[in-house]
Image (cartoon, rainbow, N blue to C red; front, side, top):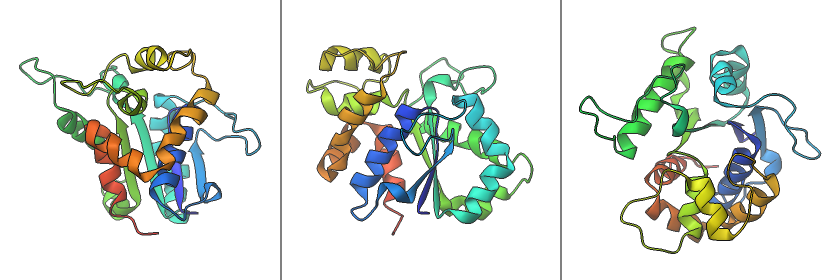
Length: 219
């Protein structure tokens, strides 16, 4: 198996799947494995609970360790909007109450995720660092999609309210709290074209950091 994906929810998996298949020419969907939550192979419905707290539990588990032994690369996807929750504990602001840059916030979240991975063994992450790829979306994966579909020139990348903004931009409903997997299947297909991946990498720093990690992978 080439890639395992640990993610928050089904719509995140759908989008990451299209990004990977667009970036790697010879990658087939049957070379991707849903790790947490697991999906039904027929209709891709979730078989168990998702969410960021379940994802963190998975990173501490023997299931994650076993996956690292049997899968070439593992993608860990999480949205930064949850990082300030008391059970996560990574602020969006510095000691002067200034909002962190995307690069710094992502590095802080990554550091915390590594601490969680090392829960049972302090150096565990270091043994497998070259197999782990972080897809940390600021502040949500919908912002990556919005970076493509919004054609207006923005002074700064949009990072808040991206689901609702996508709904308005595309004149649809289903990119906010009530996520419609068919919409994500339809609109994330733009990432099957490498030129669109390059475009969004130029517009979204967090997307670009994810893609930079893929540059180091040869299948």
